[in-house]
Length: 404
Image 1 (cartoon, rainbow, N blue to C red):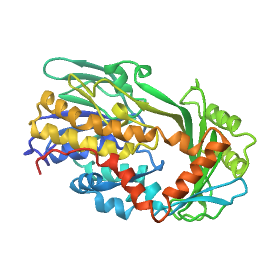
Image 2 (cartoon, rainbow, N blue to C red; image 1 turned 180 degrees about the vertical axis):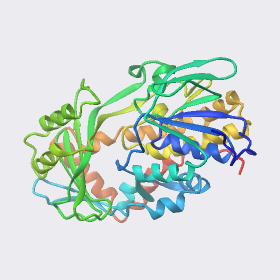
Image 3 (tube, rainbow, N blue to C red; image 1 turned 90 degrees about the horizontal axis):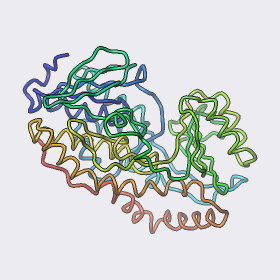
């Protein structure tokens, strides 16, 4: 592939392989293409992944980055327009009302829709290779030789791991995942369910000690809803490719729970879009090694609650910008990227540590304490203050003065 559209940019001489086409990968590809780099994105799935959880953006940093990437308006056109979510007791009585701004930020969009926006903006300038993944990486003074599971070997100047919490590329270069994954004693699952409660861009959350069920409707479809299950647990051993095994784990953990849990578990039996994973974080000693950089969840991921999508988007913007400032000198650019992003990412990760205990407090007493605290924080008098608190981490970075 020859990237003729941007041949005059400051990175026109640079070839970059990006592993992963979810969010971080296309975000980096979009920003690199703006500077003329020749970018290839390899993705192990056969096509873009649709659907997924809704993700939100908040604060002026997210807005600036998305605006300069040219996708702020399109995100607004495709946003969920999600409304309030409520915590309810076992008979459905509302205990806490959580305003939309607290849960959904300034603007919210499905992860799959965001990925599609960036893919549509880059597909004519960036090479996307689906159904393949990196097998080996061999670096020398001038570049990296890459072999693939399916495709022919190729050579690149740089490789960026943007392939998620369980990054294969990170494993190849930085070592086994067990060195970097910090388990936060909870698991989360999400899947589609019938909208039998007739929700319309609203959600309901019910907690028992150590487990929670949430049902919601994000898109106004009268027939379709989504379920979110969270439970506290010791670290489990299971096959991440065995969906039926994961369904059995969930059925066992939520057996006997009241409210809408039986209906949700019934829908789980036929669900074909189950997401199941530990609530965990990635902590690495450094984000770059030689000609390889970690981006997004591969380098500083948090399963939920840590604004991981916003951090990945900002990280891609910064990494591309620093490479442009350094005219492709990866040593200079990687050091600057790490210096800018590390503390920002850690600040957002700290927030994510609250996600599991928020949904599934361990005791009835702590459930009541959570309800009281959020009843106060979501009141009209404190809602604006609480919104500023949630934006603090999202704005905790000073962006560089990157080329236009």
